[in-house]
Every structure is written in C-alpha cells, then in structure tokens.
Image 1: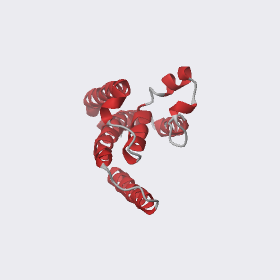
Image 2: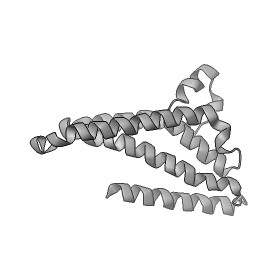
Image 3: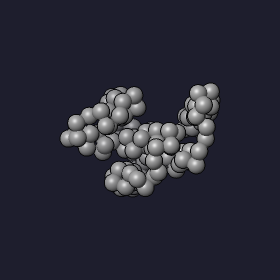
Image 4: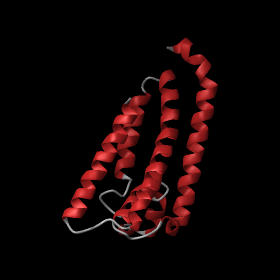
Length: 153
C-alpha cells in the first residue's frame, strides 16, 4: 500500500515542479519525455531494494534501523542539492557509483534540457548493472527464504 502512496507523492511533486518551471518561464521540451525513463529506472531500483530488505526484515527485525541509516547516508551522498561537478574527480567517481546519482542527474538533465539518456553511457551501464544485480539478488533471496516465512512469522 505504501508503494502506491510514494509513487503518488512523487507524481504530485513532479506536478509541483512543473508548476514552478512554468511560472519561471521554463516550458516543456522534448527532453522532458526522459522523465518516464528515469521513473522506470527508479521503480526497478526500488523493487530490487524492496525485495531484499523485505525478505531480510522477516528474519532480522532490526533491519529497519539499518535501512534508515543507509537511507540517510545515501541521501547525503546523492547529488540532490549539489552537483558531482563540484567535487574533485577522484571523489566524484566514487559517488557516481551511487545509483540514485544517475537518476537525480537524469531528472536534472531532463527538466533543464541539458542532455539525453545516452550521453551518460558509463553512468547508465553502472546503474543498470547494480539495479539488475539488486533485482536478481532480491528475487533469488525471496524464492529461497519464502518457505521459511511461516516458521518465523
């Protein structure tokens, strides 16, 4: 149930952002169609992370606390209020491995008409490698642990 609410919240904030852009004279362009791609990316990343954490939380109830710590850590390691270009190259390369950096930069590029999806080839490859790995790990973990859920719950 909560997943539907967070998607709805995301769409509401996108609409509010659109309103701000229109108010300030920034009008939709072809680049804005990329938002659907980045929403799809975000959905798959969340699905993979959700499968892993939901499965592990059944067996380790304190996992929720660990997840909260990692959410805070990755929030500050994600270029939302700052840009990777502000950092020295050696640090920017490390933080670019954060899959959310790809999505945030993609949203920024789409809204500000700064680039297309394929201009971030290596970042996209890193993102999709991590996302597919997380999805596969989540699916395999769920399949392996699902028979034991009844015993634990």
